[in-house]
Amino acid sequence: CRILGSHGKHMKEIAQATGAKLRLRGQGSGFLEGDERLESTDELMLCLSAQDWESYQEAVRLVNELLNGIYEQYCAFCGKIGGVAPHLEISMHEGPRPGSR
View 1 (cartoon, helix red, strand yellow):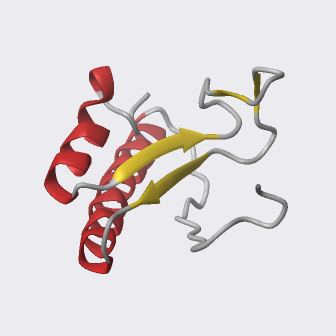
View 2 (cartoon, one colour):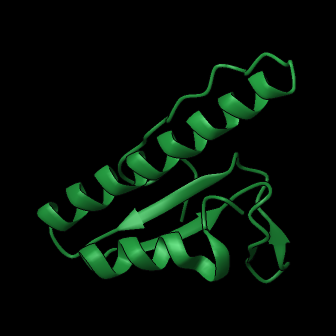
């Protein structure tokens, strides 16, 4: 997965730089949740937590940089094969999700 990087390289780099914890969850993440051990039906999301505001803000900046780079690569790929890249954007939600425990 381009988001995680080879052997989690991208997530490890962000975690080491900021002390943040990063967790990929939702459809396509491969993470099995709860006693049922099922992948969530939520959209794919990257959950991020940090010990302090400064670390959190830096982790958000690094995640945005990573995702925007992936989006640029994907758009270039689509153009290379003669396709049209879909509109991609980062959607951010802070705090607990509705319905989460």
